[in-house]
Image (cartoon, rainbow, N blue to C red):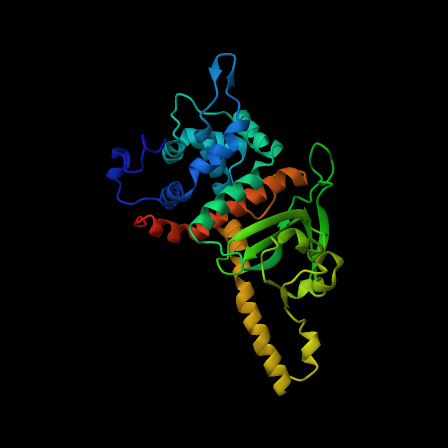
Amino acid sequence: MMTQLTFADAEYAGKRKQTRKELFLIEMDRVVPWKGLIALIEPHYPKGEGGRPAYPLMAMLRVHLMQNWFGYSDPAMEEALYETTILRQFSGLSLERIPDETTILNFRRLLEKHDLATGILGVINDYLGDRGLSLRQGTLVDATLIHAPSSTKNKDGKRDPEMHQTKKGNQYYFGAKAHIGVDDESGLVHSVIVTAANVADVIQVDKLLHDAENVVCADAGYTGVEKREEHAGREVIWQIAARRSTYKKHGKRSALYKAIRKIEKAKAQVRSKVEHPFRVIKRQFGYTKVRFRGLVKNTAQTVTLFALSNLWMARRQLLSAAGEVRP
């Protein structure tokens, strides 16, 4: 793959400036645990039928990751491979044989069928853990809304029945909700659950913990989580933000109010790391709206995006540990 076609190729050597997309792909090529991901998918990957060989698994994996990084649909990904040299170069493909949109779709469905998005998150986190980048001593939990099309102008004439409406503040949202568990030291995601938008955050916490943490931090939306039956006997320190109404009554000038505000500020500084993965998938990867109908397909993409966000957030440490200088 990249050993044959590198970004240091003569075609790029004379360029005055490398594009941001090119620099991004250079970094990702160096930090993705390719061997581990190939080993995960290979047992499920078809060997080809009727004398026509299947596309190399490495090429299809690279195409799949580019879809997630850049938000390409299946037809748009096929066109981009024809139009953009650096994307072909990254995938190791040539113009003589480019996978069509159906082939790209079938690869994604293969990953969905075998729940390999969860495996991708596991492979990446094991890779990061082996390099001391995920300590797993404490967990931060939070959730974010992902919009879904609310229009009924489609072939079914209906909104996606697996998406739901919810109210946040004074605004209504329709879509899904991504719940994550994040390591409080590294800020890396270790657990992901995707539900309809109207599912309460507090009831998902048990699925986001790995049972090795000694502290769990969350915002005020998780008030009362420690009293829930599923956490009976769980030996952790719960650091849940206090609702402002519970201490506002003391008056802003009182010593008690100021002391509580200081404690809450310290809690908020710890919790801030849980916002970083949300920023990466929404701003860096542009994932602000679900692409598919149904929770299964959208869960697979969301889990994959959070796995890739871990690599993005840890890329500097990974490149530094490998003794490489960032381009």
